[in-house]
Amino acid sequence: MARKCFISFKKEDEDYRDYIRDNFSLDIIDKSLKEPIRSDDEDYILRKIREDYLSDSTVTIHLIGAYGAENRGWHEQRFIKRELQASLRTSDSSKKSGILGVVLPCMNSTVWKGKLTCSDCGESHSCVNINDRTTISEFSYNYYIPHNKCSWSEGDRYCVLVSWEKFQENPSIFVDKAYEKRDDPISKDTRVKP
Ligand SMILES: [Zn+2]
Image 1: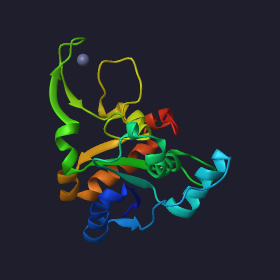
Image 2: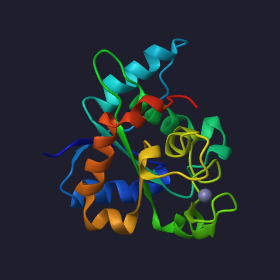
Image 3: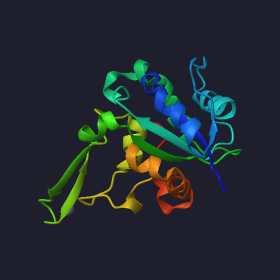
Image 4: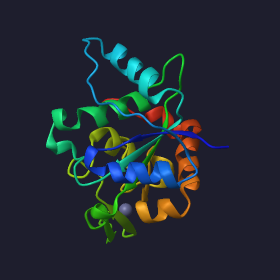
């Protein structure tokens, strides 16, 4: 079954959004937040985004490009942060969405840093730079959900991460993986506003 997907992206990465929409057999909602929703009521803001933009999507595809880092500031990232917050929120009318992060080619060498030998356990762990220098905290928190172990296994993460190259080989496999996280025990540990 095709999962309905919402794509959260920076304007600079619009070509990738268009490519996904035009070439992949995914069910894409062709909307994105361009105007802030003016209200002091946080709950109302996220509900409106869910209703008017995300609608009944169940997976949010978050494109990780060169312009989406948390440390560029709230104002710069206000739309993608709101889109992910609304995606991560569970309400009476909709359950939180699965989150699939797609690392765009320009970010490959920044994000994927190979393997490091762990000083705690002596095993080798993958070094993946998902942090405030590469993406917004709504994604990085729910990718590296805090715990007291020395590394993260797939089951310790809510967000699913894939490179653009792997994603385009078989998009629906990764969309399904993100979708299935919604019923995984780790979905109880996500945070909407880290
Ligand atoms: Zn370790």
